[in-house]
Amino acid sequence: MTGPTPQTAASAAVQLPVALIVAATHGSLGIGRAGTLPWRLPTDMTFFRLVSSAPGESSCQPAVVMGRKSWESIPNKFRPLKNRVNVVLSRTVTDFGSGTHTFSSLAQALSALSRAPHPASTIPPVSSIYIIGGAEIYTEALKHPATSRVILTTVYADEDAVRCDTFLPDFRRTGEWEQKPTADLRRLLCEIKCREAVDLIPEDGDRVRENGLEYEFTLWEKR
Ligand SMILES: NC(=O)c1ccc[n+]([C@@H]2O[C@H](COP(=O)([O-])OP(=O)(O)OC[C@H]3O[C@@H](n4cnc5c(N)ncnc54)[C@H](OP(=O)(O)O)[C@@H]3O)[C@@H](O)[C@H]2O)c1
Image (cartoon, rainbow, N blue to C red; front, top):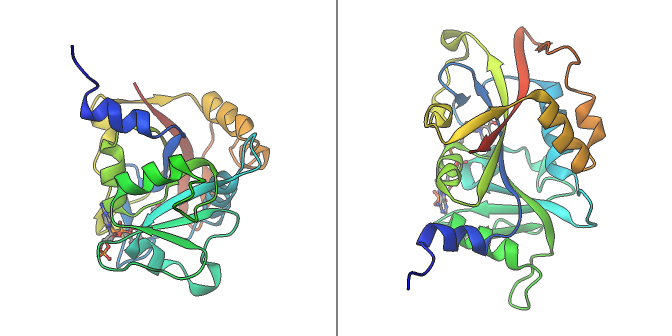
């Protein structure tokens, strides 16, 4: 008799929806420069805040999972991120202060979030899990079997002008992921009770234009 593979076992252990939410350049999937974001896109920041804090049907908050460097790039006054269960991954630091939960591996974090509330942990129950960067965490999460969606803001930037030094692996070309129509993204946002974010998506397939850049909100799902 054959048992579950390690991949299906890992996926089965995580019962919550797991999605990446990320803004990246269209060409090389650049996401960062010098430890920070390479652009200032206020509408995208609002979209990120609304989606990653939408509770959906439940009365629980979503969890946001980030690497130590991304945590450090958030200004003190904005962290922990409001209305979200903040999870920080580090192999060197064990405590990032009140309002955070720290793990030394992504697998441990996803499994603890799935089991919450658990008598052995202080994590509250969560409605869903958003992986919010940076590149190291995105790279690992793209390989994790429980990750089923990427909510990608595609930024049509001149790569020489934005000069990113941090990149996502090009998941679009692996054949494992499929871009869904914008209508599916709107439907998903309605399902998670995030109508305000729907209103940020231009009606006619147009791009958002801000600070000299054009960008669009896209949805990718694992095939
Ligand atoms: N465009 C976007 O949407 C977006 C979103 C988020 C971030 N960013 C950008 O991405 C850049 C940061 O990305 P990054 O890749 O340099 O750093 P990161 O992924 O944010 O953090 C890396 C750190 O996380 C910890 N870590 C990584 N993998 C781990 C694992 N499997 N288990 C436990 N801990 C782990 C390690 O911390 P220790 O060294 O403490 O062990 C590592 O040094 C910044 O420029 C930021 O602005 C962009």
